[in-house]
Image (cartoon, rainbow, N blue to C red; front, side, top):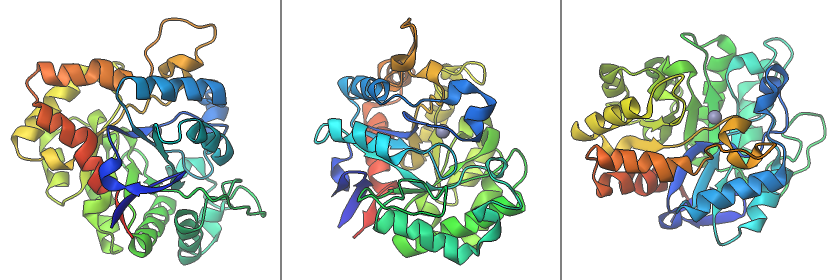
Length: 325
Ligand SMILES: [Zn+2]
């Protein structure tokens, strides 16, 4: 049986519904927050309002991609999830962001053997997440399990620490059958990530490369998709990187080339300014529901079929995030 592992338990994968495949609604600290306070999103009530807006506009499942050491807050996320029990699903992650978020000499990612780290991650997926996110010597597991493995790479380089995180992700996947969702920096190193993962025995059909819209190269996309891996196009409403229409035209082209089954979509708002419910004082901002209220209509307007949209928002997430139990 195929299931989606939400923080409130497993659900049949066909019940995933419309899915935002990469987002964040709570981030309680971590290196990014220390650099830029707009990364801090620590308010349970605001997160509830934001998630409610996503559900009100047709959303059902949000994959929240906050990994170890980057402000993941299991307790607060569970509070949000409990509020929407039977109305919406939250999937959480275990694993790592790109290497610059961890000390290359003293972090546990650096000092502990890869197989032992994989054991810790497997427990997060099979027993329950540590409420301290492995930030300290005391581990206290909740019943809430992670449902996705994360790893990350840097801009134009996969550092040694990141190669180790990829190895850990592959070992964890082999043991659990869980998807690996990758942070790529500006969409770079996709081909190399897949090479490393494949070399470690990962199943590339259960690998998702995120942020690929930042590297708009159709030949490169084909190279990646021909391995069987999936691409997540996230970050609509971030015109400082690319306008929505440019990403939409790339998606349309890839669908025309036959890659419809390997594309998932997300917002990856990432910061307070992208979560309308967090804005203080309240103002006029687009929240995560933008994916469904503004971006999907654009996809439709340029001629992407309802069937293809359903595939990217529902069917593909229901397959790639599924775990066989
Ligand atoms: Zn993200």
